[in-house]
Length: 241
Image (tube, rainbow, N blue to C red):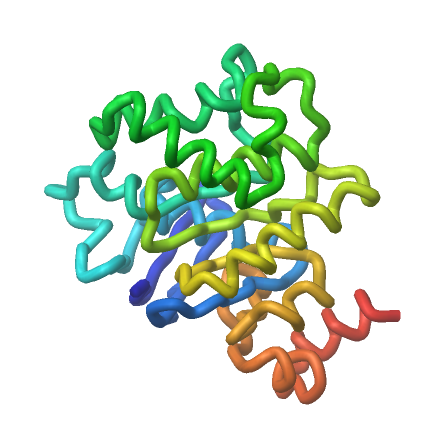
């Protein structure tokens, strides 16, 4: 589903991604782990072309994302993005947040958009809040609405950028439970997370990044129980003390 080859990105003189190459298979759940500043979020933003890579190429669902001729708006309809800070429209209701993209971008009828929105709100446990203002929701509720909004576009790939990092600790579980349920539905998912127990549970593969590079790739058991790279060992020893 995703093929990244020799991807590099720098901001001014700071190299953030250095010669990244990796594949994500159809229906695979891949978790990206590593210290803050290791390039994980920038990698996701490059896949969604929120950041333009300096070198290398990205192919998603047989479409070359880095091609100058790509229709970026059309491309983004099949790649959902869940942000740390939710990125909802705070002046709109929960339901309107879920229907506006469907009607304006996918050109669905209002009735169809409403039906799809309600189905996805029910999936994340937020249907009873459909008429609420987004401003009145807790952080966990906002993130569940953001996930439902992404699902409304029927994406082939879901990118989640530290979806629980902005939440109070007691709200993390409700969002992780929703994401765990989604991993059983066959979506291709690439998840940046600091929640190691969550990564162990849901990932088909785990990628450890350090200093803008992919240092180690393996199953959760390989990465967490038998890491080979010294940087991986040091990182895991530090966070599991």
